[in-house]
Image (cartoon, rainbow, N blue to C red; front, side, top):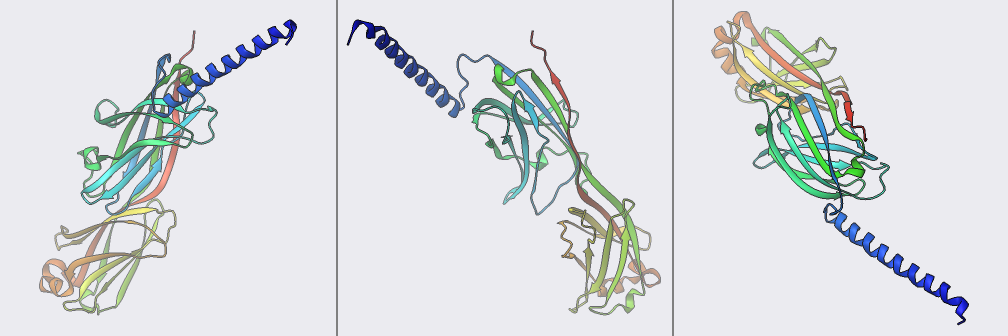
Length: 333
């Protein structure tokens, strides 16, 4: 090796040492990211996402799953996932923070996050939980049994109908260079509800025979059409059954209360049910009432041989509005 080659050899050695050092630092940083640890040299900043969900009908036997509108934090894209699941000990809300596929930030993002249920005016926190996680693209983190839904519902809501508004807040802490100029966003999701109340007078009820069916069609003020049938089972005492057929494909879920009105117009016998509607299925309401019982008290239940049924139905037409309404940004000096 000549003296002329010595500077080149020294330069190559220094380059190898520099690459090895940089690779070690990068690997250590990635390990920290995977463990959800914020790098020590990271200056922290906070982003806040508020989500209001209006007019939900809560099911009793089936689950509920939907996502918030997407929101941007710097070059990364996120949303919240909300589930209502049924367990042996009741219904629970599951909630997750999720990083969306296709955002512009190329690496995992370390986040300290807090998810909270609040009152509908966002002034009081009802329940809150916090965690740390390193989010790759399409990864999600949260709690499968965040809270029983009775813990977060408004106590003044209509008990049988189950309408409610939910306010959810997500606070995220991450490196300032990722948050960029983002500060906060507010999103609104509104369910379309077709609510109707109607009365069906069934004349000549005493002449109704087993398996004979009487049918009527009801159109709500918003245009939803329900086909309703009543018949008597061919069993002892002739138990009364009611079927509802939803011909409107826009109806995704419905909750109905059916009451027998007495001679004074007072609801004395009622049954309530919730169903995710399939246009190929009928909705079976098994009343405990029988024709024999109604005939025994015909002066109360069958004035002029007319059975009067009152229907109170709320039909969920799906999400009517879903959008990120307002975002605030800070100006870097």
